[in-house]
Amino acid sequence: MSKKKPEEMATHRSIFVDGATQRGVDAHKATELFNHIEKFAGYGFNKSHSAAYAVIAFQTAYFKVHHPAAFMAANLSTLLDDTDKVKDLIEDCRAIGVAMLPPDINQSNYRFEPVDVKTIRYGLGGIKGTGRGAIEAIVAARTSGGPFADLFDLAARVDKQFISRRVVEALVRAGAFDRLNADRAVLLASVGRAIDAADSAAAAAGQASLFGAGDGSARHVEYVKAVRWSEREKLSNEKLALGYYFSGHPFAEFATEARRLAPTALADVRLAAGRSEGGRGEQRGEQVRLAGIVVSARSQNTRRGRMGIIVLEDGTAQLELMVFSELYDRKRALLKEDQLLFVAGRVRNDEFAQRISVSADELMDLAEARARAAARLRIEVEGAGDVLQLRDALNPYRITNGHAAHGCRIVISYRNGAGSVDLALPEDWRVRPEDRLAADLAMQPRVRRAYYNYA
Image (cartoon, rainbow, N blue to C red; front, side, top):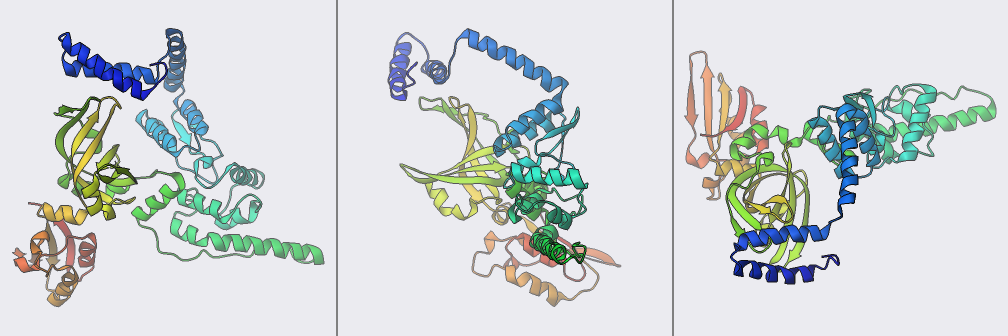
């Protein structure tokens, strides 16, 4: 045990279990007991060490209860560079009722800082791609010259030796400019223009100083026009800057429908029943149907081929998903970050590692999950309209290759001043149940809305 040699522990496992069973001890109980011994071998220490830890635990618990914002801000500032731990601590803040204010170019400093007993302001140092030198230069310019008026003002006032386009883009993606301009797409598109304008103004000021003319002030510059980001794009860019979703979660867009297709939230996954497998106390439980956004995906080689290890999130929790070789090869295209994934699988509980994961039996995107659940596309039409336009909108999604059973039925709900009627289209008018189809139909004249529903 003291040498921490796994091969020696494996040898003694069989000796221990065999000896215990010969003396009338249940094999499962003997294995469970050896798991505890093996775990202690990985990290065990004497009672005096435990007592010192207990004192520190009491002190930190006291600070967390009586000075929660200051305590959590100090912890967050210590771990600025560790995205996973920052995310966990922010979730802990929310769980204990400490509000986390978003990063703000005119309010935030480098570190996370308490605003009051129950509120913390996000530290700009926690934004990936910035760096201490850049943030301290920004704070120094703000302290000496007052709050920044806009993106162009910041680019003009902060020493170019310390900030770059990459730094400013990271601040925009994280939402640090939201109180000055909430359109992050426009801000991101304008970063290059702002830096160029600042350089031009600095050059003009140098020339004016040399020849003794002009005031060197920067001329007014307009923002670049850009299409406003969807909520999904906004969160995706936020994740690039912070390493996780801060202001919301992309799963929220699908949550209502996803819960009908996959009723178990990730936070509610538990091992309900199972059987013991192997000497390490691994158990497999009941079948579950889950849905979540892929936040990370990696693969590794095994004796049976390549397998995927996927981390899913649904806004309630994270869960590790194991995708074995044959399924991994078939569904590899779905295993990418920010993909909405539906899973049918079985719960796995590793007692030794003390973690729960899910072994995937099937993976689906939203369209396939809808088709399997016998979703119907319901189109609500009001008053007389052009039937040909409706047909033209449906045709690109129509299934005509003999796989109509994998599509979804269409029901047209027609209403006018005299009454209303539901009309189910024939089987040969099944369509692929994609989000884009519902959006296209909603743009048609006389269509009040189009959506998928379930019997």
